Image (cartoon, rainbow over the protein chains, first blue to last red):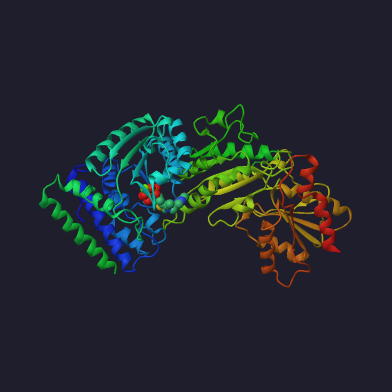
Length: 295
Length: 338
Ligand SMILES: Cc1ncc(C[n+]2csc(CCOP(=O)(O)OP(=O)(O)O)c2C)c(N)n1
Ligand SMILES: [Mg+2]
């Protein structure tokens, strides 16, 4: 796809990112259905505004991203490399990690992901320690889901990050579910408040509103970059597709309702229709070309 | 780094190795619980480091898993972290960070990503610390692809090995120190025992023999804390004119069987000794590899000697009755030679 001419962080640019993520992930589900992909694929369909909004607020020349099992969107927002990603998930040697890592283990420049929930929290904090030591001015941004916050590793990491005032930002994508389990069955208290007792600044935002996510991420990243210590950006959202490629036992009307409040619908309402349609068409062609070339 | 030839104890050697490694490279950072001076670490291996390198020595919260992850993160971003885990028993809390994180980054992204980090920890018993502070659990970390497990004996220049691991390794190292070795002077030979000249490279397997000419009647193989026991047995047997070679690898996983097999090929009888508990043990790997290498050339099956598979009591007699002893080793050698 052509490089966006619109400034990063504008709704137009974020729409382009979201449309690309949506097109790639929709195709991945399709490829899975056709038996072209092995293992598993977790899509972030419905959560694109978080990837687009947060990453647009970062300094891509130096900031570091640690992603999770649901990381395609973060990766595409970071580098736009749809071909490397799709080839990777197809297990091809021309994939970004030569087919070794697959969907959940991606690395390119300052982007790293791992499919173990929670474990990347201390690793991200260590990276932040490295960046602080080098005085690079970079911040380290970790993405995690609501369910993952039940892992103890986070609380050891929060403690160290706050104690040493490290440039660490945790972006929580609260989509209300962990695999098949609704939040109410596995989280006590208020999830958004988890980091507060550590003295960590927490900002809560509507994760389906790209502009709101972006604005909050800018505020929080400035705060963190100034040396004030770590922060948590807590985003509420909804996963529209199944947890992975498989069955979805959630209430059908709940899902249908969520489709009316999803980030792309929300962005389209604010943008000229012709612009959105042109972007949609361009990404569709781009992704189709990639898949044809890889077939 | 130039080898440290000053006479010293195992502990002093390690301490000097750390000082030298930190002085040599600004990228080396040291992190662990209670490591700041004047305390200098629970066993004082890190003494003086925080005074000399205040910006690069970090006392950490009691979060073994997180400090191991911290090290991975620092290593991924260009530093060379060394982490101290206060007691080897607490390595259980680092397992996910080692197995699913530290050793994965180097290999799972399709191209080698450097993850230069060293986790060092005191292991073993004989100091009365009881069931949860006396164990030798390193066997659970052996055989992990991408992890080098190093456990020097006091016949090795322990500090040089540690320095080499910090300076040169590009993937994670688990460095196992034996508490029982800390006060011992590094061993360079005695009236009855001679240390074979080692090939270059500090990781080299060391061989100590209780004879000058001829061939060994039996070979004792072991690492770390059982080295002094094996040397004591070799001295006792020298007086009975029984020739034994004590073979001491420093890198216990992955295992280079060649230098061990070479010595065993002469003796045709071998015993593997370890302080960890018997069953699914390091000796099983050594024995299997020796049988693969020397099939049909051994007079006896390789004999495994380990501590009893039970918890380690705190009381002196209870602990002594559980851990492998020089008497156990000596008796086993006689049985093998019978
Ligand atoms: C340590 C660990 N435990 C369990 C899993 C299996 N698993 C993968 S995703 C997932 C649910 C995660 O939920 P959440 O953190 O809310 O993220 P979401 O999938 O909703 O994006 C589970 C249980 C895992 N990958 N790692
Ligand atoms: Mg979730």
